[in-house]
Image 1: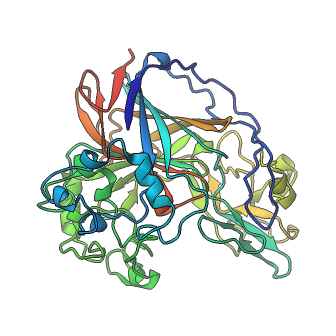
Image 2 (image 1 turned 120 degrees about the horizontal axis):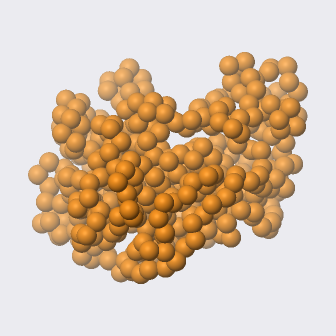
Length: 467
């Protein structure tokens, strides 16, 4: 559902403030009804225009379940014949997104593991603008709690070791576990209407993100085992080093099957497609792994979902057993080496992000002799400055009164080969994904395929020039 209107917004300008937040711990740690203070990652960013002069587009995101591209082609999908003949998703589903999401989220053939109480749809408010050098996209959506934590380790004194304590929904919690997964906003960007597969009558313009979604991916019905992926000569340990299947384009496979041909990678074809710009640009705002660094992931989708071609991401992974080359908190700056469990229970995580770089850095090298108490915690993701093409998109965000407001900023032409060039007068095919309430992979919300144009062009989302 699309609704175009104008509304006024004041430019958000605030210094970074210490924040405390209740995680909404549905856990064996403790439950609480505590309210959430605001979280501000906007820094000194000032939008150079007036958001009150920028058109607003309301989009309904909805729950898709396990509706992969392969399912869309099955007879069980009433629109299968239409897709084969070039009819897109919006022809049948536009205006019915909420009902569709509600029918899927409660559990059926396409949702074998429903999440109790999860809504079937969520509204997303969008505004877009550009000037001579930069593109700006502002998004707002309601979120009961700010997802600013991710993987967390907890010290188990009885075992004398660090144990992974956080989970994603819908998986049940064990003793001393809690739900912890970052909120996320994802945007795919296409300038070629890439076909769903070689010879298909529909592409990104007609089916949106379903060109990337296949039954072999994580949490999908025909996903291969970790061992199978690791053993694959191209995707596995001897080359890409992956152990699961994520987004990819069917055009990069030399043969297709009910599992999406995950193992039939045509690497030469993929290389040619990249050189010809036949890939999807993917931008992801990540509430824990990038937002505190005022950054977003700048990725792309081809034969796999890749990070950018150069530089480093805004986070580092660390895994037990911890050694001197890993990180803990600097006691002189934070008052502790390991994040105390009682602070998490009380929602007092103002010092929870662990920074190795930037003005808020609070790190120290891990000291095996430092005393860890039962319940002490360390984040798996340590934050740093993103560089190269992986740092090509900035993100300025704020959570307040049950709502995220995020502004993504990138150059019209970043100069990197894995980023689409944005040009005045052009229209792009886009789709959005929204991760909320501690979920990962397919348990997010999606939009129907949309268009976005820069300047005086006809598109669902119109970016206006502000200078």
